[in-house]
Structures are given as structure tokens and as C-alpha cells.
Image (spheres, each protein chain N blue to C red):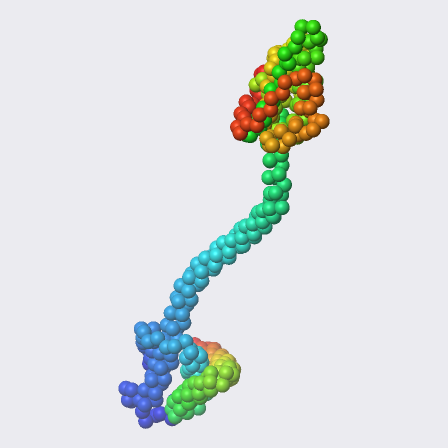
Length: 125
Length: 241
């Protein structure tokens, strides 16, 4: 479990230390990329907890989501319509759903653990 | 975890490598966007400072412009006032000139200003008389002087003097035996009456047939008329009037 956390910290450090300036026009893309990345992360965690995790789905989802969101934002910028809002909305809703599922699973697991513990303890005595 | 029992022993399995990559990229994106937004915040705060400064300058400018506007309005009002005054002055200028000239003429007439210019000099002398006849018929009386002075005044004389005594508007002349008294000063004959004015007009007024000179000659007064190019008369000071 420590490896993803380490990777995250490493990535954040790299990002903060990077000193590349991008034009203000592309800041929409960045916000979308952030959302897509978070969505994929939480999606991966949920899949892991639900035991339906798959490498290919995870990786392809990560890159495809980011590419799709960036494409939408690109289209929106060039059409004069704020299409990136659609991506933000979709990702936001999925993010909250994923987090809700993760929370529920964790609570279930905790309850199970407590139950098991309370069953085990009297037996041990 | 169910699909990787065969990779459990590996130090860095494919799955963990993937997760690591994704995590690093996510972290990178997060950090990078944080960095950018931080830069933007800094810039915004700086630009906010500059904006504030600009705002204050702009307010100052607006205040100055308003002040300028007020002042220019005032200037316009004053200029229109000046224009008004000038127009009034223009219309009244002629009147003022006339008034000033009139005032000067009146002063000369009053004797407050020294009079000088061309004029006439009239000398009235007693006729040589024999002791048998009435001497009153041969000496110059005040009435003769009066008639000459009146004629001169009517003819437009500006200033009149008798034997050097300037006459003013309220001078009095009275007969006192062989002398006449003018404003308290006694003068004997002959009487030299000088008048400043248009010499020809005065002379012709005096010499008109049946006029003053004829009457004087009838009254046995010796009259000498002389036209003079320059007569100077002193102003009457308050003291000797």
C-alpha cells in the first residue's frame, strides 16, 4: 500500500518543483486533467476494494479519460461553448459516486472486522 | 488481488508499476496545477496592488479633471462677464468722451482750470470829458462791463477776466464811483476784458451793428477791440474767490 502513496508524493514534489509556464488559455485543460486523474485514482481504489480491479481498464481509463476531457475542452475553446463543463460535471459526479462506494465498502469491512473480533475474543478466553 | 497470485513474489510487479506510474502522473498534475494556481495568485495579488494604485491615480485624475472643469466653467463665466463689460463699455465709450469733454469745458467755465487759447481783448476807457458836462456820461459804468461780458458769454467765451481778475460763475461786479469792484477787488478804468474763445466769433458778436460796441460808442466809451492768438488765464484758487 505504501507504493502508490510514495508515487503520489513523488509526483506532487515533481509538479511543484517544475517551473514550466503554460499559457492561460490551457488552464482549463489542466483543471480537467486534475479531475480525470482523481476520478481514475478513486475508480481504481473502488475497483480494488470491490475485487474487480483490472490493469488494462485502469490504465486505459486513466489515459482515455484525460484525452477525452482534453479533447472536449479543446473543442469547447474553439467552438466558444464551455464544453469542458460537461467533462467536469461527469467526472465530478463519478468522483462523488466512487468515494461514496469506497466509504460504504470500508464501513462494511470495518463492521465485519468488529463483528469477527467480538466473536473471536470470547472464544479465545 | 485475486488475479495476481503468480506475481506475488516479484518486487515490482506489473500491476504495481502501473499503479505507481498513474500515481506519479496524478501527483504531477496535482502539484503542477497547484504551482500554476499559486503563481497566478501571486500575480493577481501583485496586479491587485497595481490595480489599486491605478485606481487611486484614476480617482485623483478624475478629481483633477472635475476641478479643471469647474475652473474652466468659472473662467467661461468670467470671460462672458468681461465680454459683457466690454460691450457695455463700447456702447458707453462715446458718451463718456462727451461727458469728459463737457466736464472739462464746464470746469474752464467755472474757472477751476486755467484757460488758454486764442481770444479777444476789449479795452473800455473813459472818454475825455470837459468839466462843464456831466462826468457820469463819460465814464465806464458797470452796465457797460456787464453788457460786454454777457455778449461774450452768449458768443461762447470759455473764460473771461477783467484786468487780470478771472470771473467765475458766481462773481459779482458792482459800481463804486470811478472804480468797479469785482469779487471784492477794486479796479479802476481802463478795464481790459479778456475772453478765451473763438476770436472771430467773439469779435463779430461784439461788432454786430446795433450791438454792444455800438451802444458803448453811443455812451461815449472808448472801446478797443483786439484779437489775440494766445491768452492765458490762471485758474481761480479757492483762497482768493
